[in-house]
Length: 473
Image (cartoon, rainbow, N blue to C red; front, side):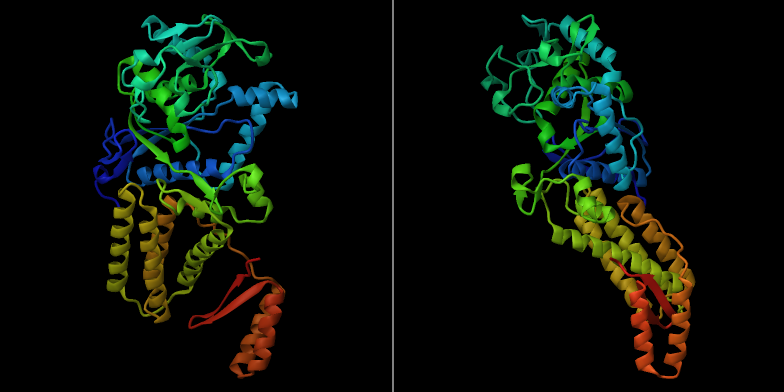
């Protein structure tokens, strides 16, 4: 599937257009993705972003890039402090619990780990240094209470990501909270002087007693591990303002350099056609879905199956369809193991070359996953037709199986293959059924088939003999 990596095009939110991807350093990619704020279990809207970013990374790696992936953990901000106080726990204990839960969740969803997961509380010195640089340049200033704010009027390009017009903003107005709407855009907090409501969460630094604002955290950590300018920064559209807008302002004002070459944002997730909200009863964490007995790989498939820049409607019906799609791939793998037909190498080569081209061109086009998946399942259909006509030999079958595994290195939706032994009781019933079939005793053969089903074993009679699998519950 490989071809020159320069042919990948990605939609850059900053320019609002697709652009050929050209890394700063040939063959290498610096990727920063906004990680979780560890104050609660991550919900499926969060995981839409994390799965999209995983797909992006896998595709870049597939195309031969060495990706350094940094995903932060926000373990100090307004929400984590409020949550820890509500539970009466020290902040590190509170956030540590939800960080561990996050790592377990991404393992279950088969999301490949980042190269490094920096925690905000481990990088206070880097944040202080960045804020001091902004103070020295006169772009940041101290307020009456000792907090430090970024003066957006001192950065003429403020608003270039989210398309806010700085002329319409109220000069000198300040906002201390971490999250706010575009209409409330004002000078934002870089360092928050300690207040009684912060309790025991503070650091004694050259800036005084206090804690960092949310936005400075990502600037400091991304530049520490990826440099002052790096290739790609991802997040959800809700991160575009104020978080990413403020990251750009404080980073570029401090360094005088372009901060990020390509900004990528995934759209919102809906549930059954409505915005996810606890009051609507449609708010789900991953753990809520797993508690319902739902397949985590089907959840992953569903989350990645809609293009990242389209709003995605999560429905339980679509989850069933996702499970069926994975089962089609698994069933093809099973059929290929038993294939021993006359073979048609030319036709198999033609199909493989076609699916390589179609899948690759789609993914190179800003991760056009719906077209890529359509080509993959056209391939599955055509291979099944060849198998039905006994036109796949064992050598061709091995090649096709290898290609499916290769595609799954990008998709990550196939379950780990386990060689499972057939229970002895079921093995005996299959032998008796074969005797009945050879004697054309169809009534007995059907009764034995039902006995197998009662044991959770489904059988299929093929030209290569009987195939079996465990029935999906």
